[in-house]
Length: 395
Image (tube, rainbow, N blue to C red; front, side, top):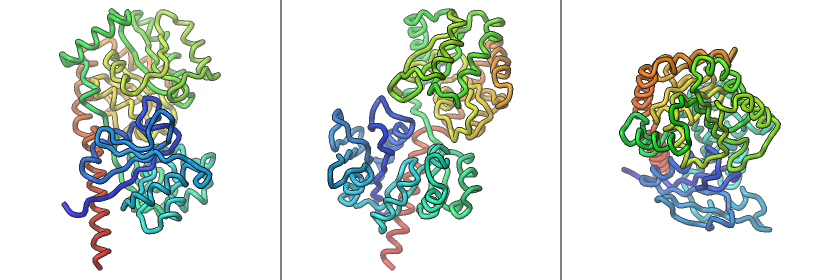
């Protein structure tokens, strides 16, 4: 197998890991790390909180949470001191391009990889264009989660194009089970009964309640759906931020729209990720109405793994996940509410089509979008890097 790679993954430091109150970045690292750690020497570095120890092994993953001090007052400086002790071959920075330069400066003999999850931290509001250009050029490898994101980076920074690799994200198929399976059907019926949702057709949105996610379009679509299917219930699961439930002006607007249809709309506050699968199991149709250029959209494949067809805007990387007319529907980013209503009614009109698309979704996930697939690709790339390093050392 060759030299065993030593890899340190540096999470952004905004949220603790692992935790029920973290962003999708930490969830991705936790899931891939648990599998990659079986093949490589892996450390995950993250935010120190009073509730979590400075170091621990959990599910085979070694977590390190360095505390800040007067000598090391910043997250980067505290993490850097830990990296100096761990001596990894690769430092992998999660979703913070500026940190690439800091680690390159502090650890010039190590490879520094950048794992990008979205376009958010590529924007001028987050990082100076010159700093971003330097970071992408100096990174030894850039991992992205979709071809959309690869093209986005390569077109803007051609010098970085050759080092970009695509690693699709995944889903835990032992957790997100098919609603059409005996186990899934039993769980679904129990939840419908417990919530008082029996005899309802369930439309589901799961995600943050921020404007670019387009939740207002879904609420605007509801009158046309209710007119044709008066037994429809829209369940909106999420909040404006991870782990908390602030009532922002946008959330207030959504509640006002929902209050006009009190028998047909339910808002469910933030749900930890380890409970999200229960809500997907309830759904007849999932809707992802984002009008932002989302790089991937993990909720799409979580719904698909649950056997639920997805109606999503033709935005960003979502075009790579959903096969239009086969596993769900892709709709234009224009006249979104009308398009949601049309496609939702088409599915609710035809339960057999809903099941057919749901089962096709399950097959697509198993072939392309599991954590096993994602972890295998990452581990292979780490080994390739370690082999190159070993050959160069022998020379």
